[in-house]
Amino acid sequence: MRKSARYTTLAAAGLLALSSLTACANDAASTTSTSKGDGKGTKVKIMVGGLDKVIYLPAMLSQRLGYFDAEGLDVELLSEPAGVQAETALVSGQVQGAVGFYDHTLDLQTKDKAVESVVQFSHAPGEVEIVSSKAAGDIKSPKDFKGKKLGITSLGSSTDFLTKYLAVKNGVNVSDFTPVAVGAGPTFIAALQKGAIDGGMTTDPTVATVLDKKAGKVLLDMRTPEGSQEALGGPYPSSSLYMQTDWVNSHKDTVQKLANAFVKTLKWMSTHSSTQIADKMPADYSQGNKILYAAAIESTLPMFTKDGVMPKAGPETVEKVLKAFNPNIKNAKIDLSKTFTTEFVEKAAG
Image (cartoon, rainbow, N blue to C red; front, side, top):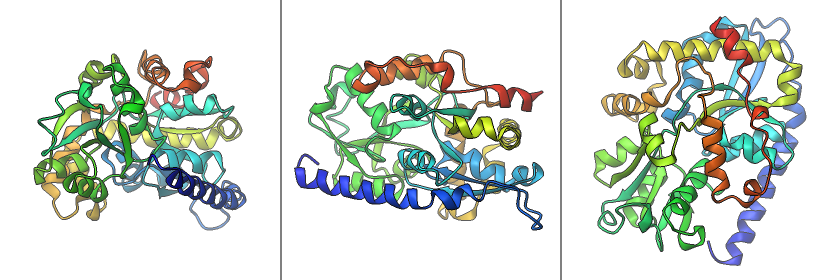
């Protein structure tokens, strides 16, 4: 990662990806009107930063429960391995919505992109900092990140943001450790087992699998509001449905229908067991172990809101975290009121 050749390769790959996304923009724009004669209703494309991640579970669950259909929506769920790719798909016009971390709305505001969270799924990150079994003796806290290789989903992702904050908060400069983009699931686990990373930040069901394989141990658990408070100093709104503000303002009826579906899903989740939730999800999400998958959902359920409303003081916590290490945000004046809206979830609840 420190070699210029790698930077060149990454940059080229990024440009190629962005070009591909931009090429799809016109096609995506044409799909937002009401379908004619097919009975499927209004077409909406939503990019998810990993459909099988438990932190983004409400997206697929809403579809499986039939709540999109009930609202007259034809929602196409697409998947990218990391939230930063979902962000790119949104701002390029490939999709109308993104399911990813709320912190992207602040980052995008500094780049003159008006994006806002319209349904807030969570009040905690849902992330876990794992250390490999081999490195567990050397990494007792984020103070020991110096000189280590730490796994993240991708550069510029929310796992990247949070890892940097934990380092800086504990006296380690961001230049003192090496972030390694390893994705999630099998690629994260393989990197951990082979020693390509000493630890890393990931979510369920990857966490449950790592622990089951005894490939690593939990260093910090941010799947609960209490864990978020301890690690980050407050509630940390993470997974959300966010959209470009201009699109929201010009498609309020469609956004309201999306909010109605997601709020119904969050309420359903709050009254059903992890096993019942697991039963509703695609069979391949459990990777052949339904019990372990249900346990992964159980561990992550505390992160979710019941009403889709932005938690009080949540945006301020996110801003504090990002300002600690991100020079673009540290020196920028962020208007937090423009990074989210509760208009649609409040109507959904009413």
